[in-house]
Image 1 (tube, one colour):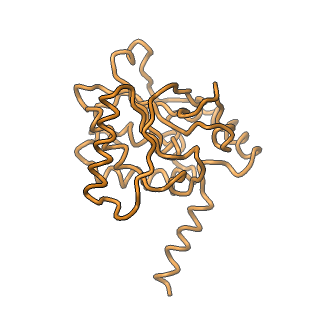
Image 2 (cartoon, helix red, strand yellow):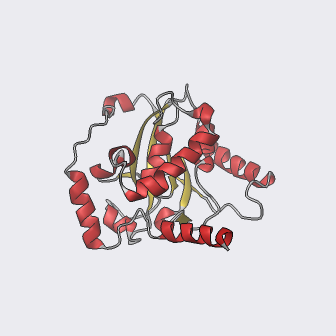
Length: 231
């Protein structure tokens, strides 16, 4: 009986922990608390960022996704934001409640001499479940869907070829990959308090119970991809 019940209890726990606050007042309170904190992380200047290439992905709560890509060598900066929809200037409140067609996404600045777009695609697929439609872990809704964005035909082919490889090798068994492969259009930066959220809020219940375990699973499977100082 215990063997059957334990996974169910874990699912109940995760279901009660979400990237999305339970109601509007909770969301506003989180925003006010986080905006009052000092952002101590060192960010590259706009001029420095121009030296690197960009890639865009969506695979669930951007707090988790940002932390994962920031741990990868060759990645110089990662920003949380919104992409994949048509509405202009979306806010966290609008996106997280599913009031737009955008997904929570990340903008990855990387050095192509240190890591390739193909490797970033591998990181993307290796750090989330691409078979769960409009869901990632405890987070449900189209705003948490899986999307791999491409900026040209070469990138599109890289993404599709890798999906074909995963399916040919039966990596996910009989579960189909539901990742959207979409042309990149526009990335909207998320509010400042979301940037480096995992690093700045290590005691947050979602970070402790969802983000950090997800990050640790990724690090275990992609040791050769990690920066020496990856936390």
